[in-house]
Image (cartoon, rainbow, N blue to C red; front, side, top):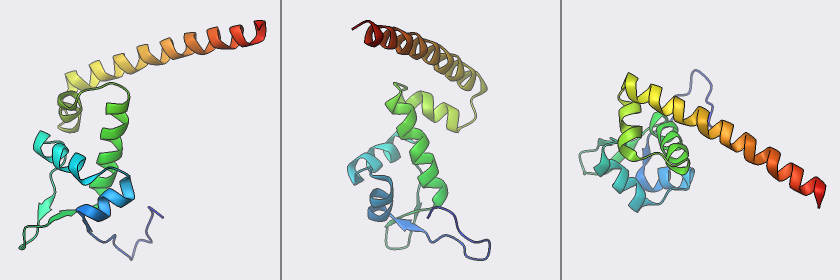
Length: 113
């Protein structure tokens, strides 16, 4: 449902719609906006207007935060901070290696029990 035919542009989303589609509550969306990682457009009535790109951005933010990265790090990545991107990639690669070691250890323990 996230893909649209080329001739049908996606419709803008209001905060409650983005919240529903993403599973992220409105309070967290406001927090992300204050932190500078989400920057919605404003309508004449003051309502925030989000787009599909904001939904994708939000998914990236949630994934990164869930993996232990801070919002300042994520903000740097989103702004194209090459050094920050490189450090983030190094951290992810180390986490991946650590997870693989843990996976092997748990598999071994499961076989031996």
